[in-house]
Amino acid sequence: MSGTVVNNTVRDSGVIAATAAGLNWNATAITASTVTVESGNGYWINTTSNTCTITLPSSATKGDQIVLIDYLRTWGTNKIIIDSNGLNYQGQTDAYDVEYNTDGQSLNIVYSDATQGWIPLDDDVSAYEPTPPPTQKGIFGFGANGPAGTFFSATNLVSSSGVVASDVTGVGSTRTNLAAAGYADKGIFGFGELQTPSGAGVTAITNLVSNSGVVATDTAGVGTVRYQTAATSYGTDKAIFGYGHAGGTTAITNLVSNSGVVATDTTGVGTARTHIAAVGYGSTGQAMFGYGNTLGPAVKQSLTNLVSNTGVVSADVTGVGTARSGLAACSYGGDKAIFGFGIDGTAKTAVTNLVSNTGVVATDVSGVGTARLLLAATSYGGDKGIFGFGHTAGPSVSLTNLVSNSGVVASDTTGVGSAREILAASSYSFSA
Image (tube, rainbow, N blue to C red; front, top):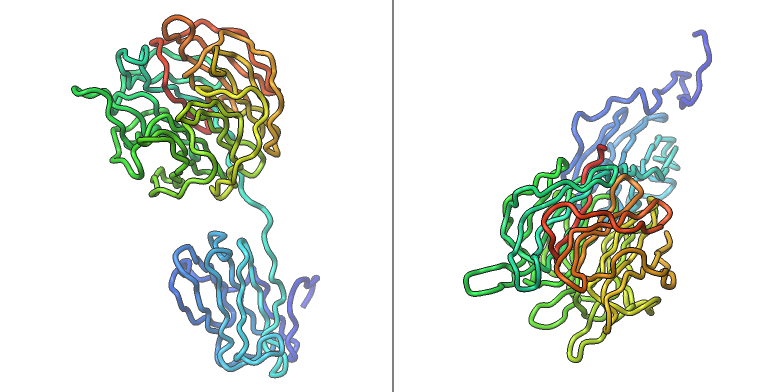
C-alpha cells in the first residue's frame, strides 16, 4: 500500500477498517422506537416522536464500527438507549443503562475486545445551529378607521427598503385588535374583534401569510378567543400569541409551530393585561411581552415578561420607562428591539425604549414623530424597523416612522394606504 493513511482504526490482522465516511449508510432515517443495527453501517436516528432503543450486534470483531447521528437534533427531547445485546459497553455488561440525550450528538463506536466491548471513538455534539437569514419585508394588515368605524382586512406590504405599498384587497374576516408575528419566512395574523351584523365579536381565527406576502383565508381558531393581544416570533422559526382581553384580562399564550399551526392554550404567566406589545431579540431567538394595561381599575404598566427560545414565558420583570398601553414594538440591528408610542394614562406619546440583545429595557428616549397609540410595527430589511398607522389626537392615520439599524426613530413619513388603527404587522420573506 502506498500513500498516507489517517483517521482509521487498525485491526489485529493489519486490515484497516473504514472510517465513518466509508461506512454503508442507512438509506432512510430511523423513526421506530426500536432498531437492531449492524457493524460497518451508519444510521440517522430521528427521535422527533419517540425514544429509540438501539440494539447492537450480538457478536462483534475487534475494529467493528457503527455510527449513530441525531438526525433532527431531538435526542435532548427523546433520547436513544443502547442495548449492547450481551456484549460489554465501555467495560460494563449490558445490565447497565447506556443513554445519550443531547441534541445534535453523534456517536461513533468501535468494538475492542470482550473486556471493554464497544468503546465510543467519538460522542461529539455538533454545536452549530443553522440560523435562518433575517426577514426582509413586512406587512401591515386589518384594523379600523376609528374604534367604531369601518373594519378592514386590507394589507399594505413593506419592501426591504422600508417603502409601504398601497392597499392590497383584504382576505379573511375583517377585524381589529388582533396581533401578528413572523415565523420562519412567513407570517400569521390572529385573534381580534370581528365586525358582525350584531356588533363586534371576539375570535381566535388566524390568517397565514406566505413568504411572498399573500394572505390566506381564515383558519379556524384554536385557543381562547380574545382581543387586544400581542404576538412575536421566537426561536429560529416559531411564534407566540399572548395576553389580551377574554371577558377580562388574561396572560394565556398560544405557541405557533414552524408550519403555522397554533397550539392550544398554555396557562398564563405574569400579570394579565391588554393592549400589550411583543417583540423578539437576542442572537438565539428570545422574545418579550411588555407594557400594557390592567383592568378594574385601568392601570398602565411598564413591566415585561421574557420568552425563552423554546417559548417559555417568565414571571414579571420590573418595568423600566413610561408605563403605557396601546404601543407597538419591533426588532432592529439583528438582535435588539424597540418599544414605542402608546398612551401613558393622560396623553398620547411617542417615547421609545430600546431593548438590548440580552433583554434589558432602557429608560425613555424622547419621542420622534407624531404621538399616537393603537399602531403596529414590524422589522424589515434584515436589521431595521417601522412603526405605522395608529390613532392621533384626530382621526386615524397611515403615516409611518422608520427605525434605523442603530435604533434611531425617524420623523414622520407621509402615509400610504387606508388610514386606520388597532391593526397588526408582521415580517416575512428571506428574499429582498
